[in-house]
Image 1: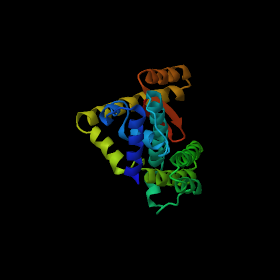
Image 2 (image 1 turned 90 degrees about the vertical axis):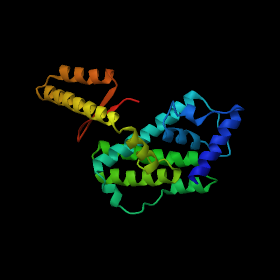
Image 3 (image 1 turned 120 degrees about the vertical axis):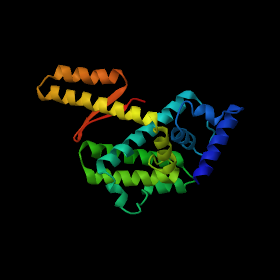
Image 4 (image 1 turned 45 degrees about the vertical axis):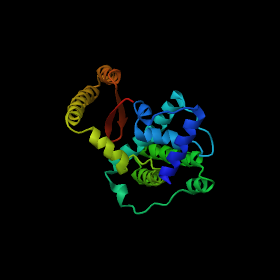
Length: 220
């Protein structure tokens, strides 16, 4: 079903333009799972008219899902993997049974992600686990699970060699900087702490304060 969904959406996109749009060209703008999200988000019976704005919106939507899955998995440290086969939400099943209504199915995914993010903010690990298992079950049906081998494997290979070493160095530098920020906050020097965070933001590093401590990621 995964390949069928992707193939149908890709064909519709090409026909709506009246010409060819090479996948290799699109993949210079977005990653492969983001492109897949863009292609499957429309109903297979509808035309998908390509636009840069729509592609960027789809990429941003997938990144929101991806951030939750990665963050929740890190918080749970793999505990969700032991929960056994999960059940799919009724809303997701109904959408897919209704002539492959992927747009409504994706709405169910985003609802689980929203609930999961709220649970993360409240440090409610039981609810985080439930949302993560549910979201990954739905994403697996759609071929969009960020932790599935096709996507996780490509991310791992891209980070090998010199790139991997650079990431390690960057991580160490950011960790050191965040420690300096924590020290400033501990001595109530909030102006310095804010300046450190703003400086990281300016160079493309987004910092989020969580109950487990500060988290950082590169801005997309």
